[in-house]
Image (cartoon, rainbow, N blue to C red; front, side, top):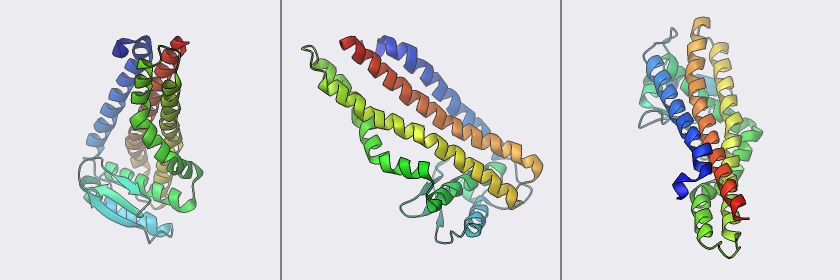
Length: 230
């Protein structure tokens, strides 16, 4: 019954299709441009190192990570981790993704507000994403007598997960903007290479938009169910 409620049909199902579309789009763009070599011939690791050094971040390390599209920046250890195709590759996708992750390192060093806020709410968001929805539905079992405390607590916890996704959007878009500017400014990309590189980064950003849409859809579903309990 819970899986077929009105909120699931109206909000969650469309969000699921959006998530699948975004995932397919980023994989398509990645696999297309990971095969297109950049004219500069630099690897993702060398580009990342150059941008970091130009930004005065010689204390940030670069490591190779396993898996595909596993690239990320670890602010705790100040390490940019790049998947093998990005770390060693000289493609447009390699350069764009490497520069994007360096963008996060620059955000961290500059105290970018949205990134600081995201890091601050992460513990609550992580807790809420794991326990918010289960706690809400457990509360449904005990709300027959009018006690909706657990349902309300579940919604409050899940709200932090939604907030985290919302705050993530400017963080990701800003990192991509920084990436393109750095690649152009250092002549790692020619004018005609900018558009396809942006295509990869925009496709990746779409996955975060989809994740936010899914989180909002879940929250609206919970609120709709909670409203009916009144």
